[in-house]
Length: 275
Image 1 (tube, rainbow, N blue to C red):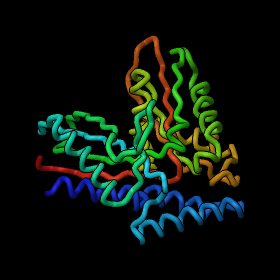
Image 2 (cartoon, helix red, strand yellow):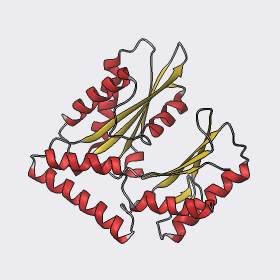
Image 3 (cartoon, helix red, strand yellow):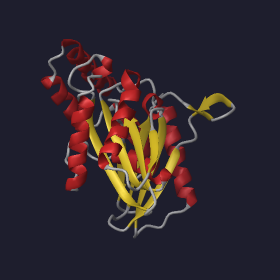
Image 4 (cartoon, rainbow, N blue to C red):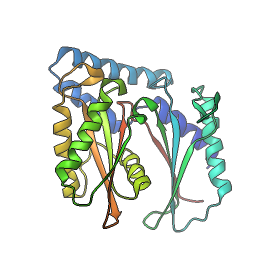
C-alpha cells in the first residue's frame, strides 16, 4: 500500500463524493417533502452531489479545514513522524485535487495555506491496524458550535432545549438540512470532540444505546418542527439526523457540546491492516 496515494485519494473521496448514508437520508427527505420550495432545494442539493461525483469537483466551495482522526490499534506503534506524514499527504491531496486552501494564522491571518490540518490520535484496544479518517469541516456550520457546562442536577429536558436552541441560532445561514453531533460528558474539550466524532458514524443507523437513541429521535422530531427547512425554505426537514456520543464525567459537571454539519457532511476513511 502506498499510504500517501491512499490518503490523497481519501481527500478526493471526501470532497467529491457525498457519503452514501447522507445521500440516502437526503433522498428520503426529498420523497417525503410536501413544501414545493423545500423540495426544490433538496433537488438542487441532490443534483449538486451528482454533478460533483461525476465531474470530480468539490461538493462545496468551502472545502473546509481538514480534521484527521487517527485511530490506532494495540498492535501498532506510531511516532510523531507518521502523524506529520499523514498531515503532509492530506495537504498534497488538497493541492493536487485543486481544492481551495483555507487555513490561515488565527490572529495575523495572511495568505491561506494547505498546511495546518487538525489531527486527533486515539489508541483503541478493539481494533487492529490503523484507521485514518479525513473530515473536511466547513466553517459556515463550524462557527455555530456550542458548549454549555450544565450543573450536574440539570434535567434532560434542559439539555434538549440547549441543543434545539443551538440549531435555531444556526438557522438557514449554515445550509440545512443539518446533521447535528452532540457530545455529553468528559471535560469541556472532550464534549466538543465527542460531538465531532458523532458525525463520523453511519447517520442512517440507530444508536446502539437505547437511551441515546431515544434522545436522538426526540431531538430530531423537535428540530424538524422548527420549520427552518432545506436552505431555509421551510418544510419538514431541518435536520437529517441527530447523533449523540457520551463519556464519563466528574460528579460536579455535565458538559454538553454541539457540532453542526451542513447537508454536505463529508468524510472518508482508510483502513490499514499492516502497518
